[in-house]
Amino acid sequence: MPTTRFAPSPTGHLHLGHALSAVFAQRASEGGSFLVRIEDIDGTRCRPEFVGSILDDLAWLGLEWQTPVRVQSEHFDDYERAVALLDGEGLTYPCFCSRSDIRRATEAPHSGGEQVYPGTCRALEVAERQDRILSGAPYAIRLDMESARARVGTLTWTDRQLGKTTARPGQFGDIVIARKETPASYHLCVTVDDAIQGVELVTRGVDLAECTHVHRLLRALLGLPEPEYWHHPLLTDDKGKKLSKRDGDETLKAMRREGTTASSILNLLAAWL
Image: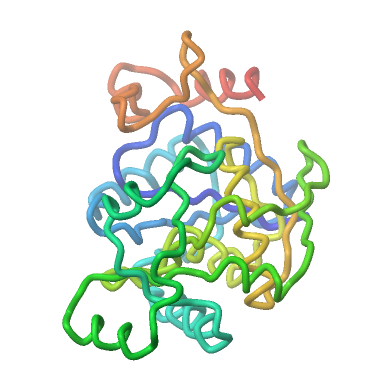
């Protein structure tokens, strides 16, 4: 009876793809604990008004979850402690490069399609780093990937669908774990949150499976217990494209207004699963 979670970001209303992830997580708990977490660390895109809408849609679907709901923006101190721990181990450094700097210095993206940071600021002298920070220059905190991998050695993670996988976090380069204006990145937040909440089975879409390479490394560095994973297939449109809030795919709220019933949606998702 594992503890599972559904962790949406309040950047819009839920659509069918979100409903699939939520129902999948709830069913995967197999009578254990099902949690809901609001991932609102991105203050530029997240909106408080969407939180109520998300919880209302989940309740309408008939899902029940343990309370209280964890809201990331209420727990910055947890993430700051994790960053401090990594910094204390000499595994981080400030990076002052802009996105355009990185594009100019990078030859090819990693498998996820993003530019891999070439480590430009890794070799800066301590005095220069401090001078730039004191001058007010914007910066990110990056993980020294080579040092981090050497610290933990070979790691693996297990997925109920994909089996046992050897972690390959090096493909992502020196990842950002925090920024001057944001206490932590998605990778660090989700890793810390899952450990604090006692999540034993991480369920999410297969499009996020690649992130697990990084999360496995962070758990090892922070001394956190390792869960089991289950990455489920995505719900797609008739062209095979993943449903997305950014693309304006129809929301559960709109479907409810049009008279769609919760049972019809649950039947559709059950057939897909």
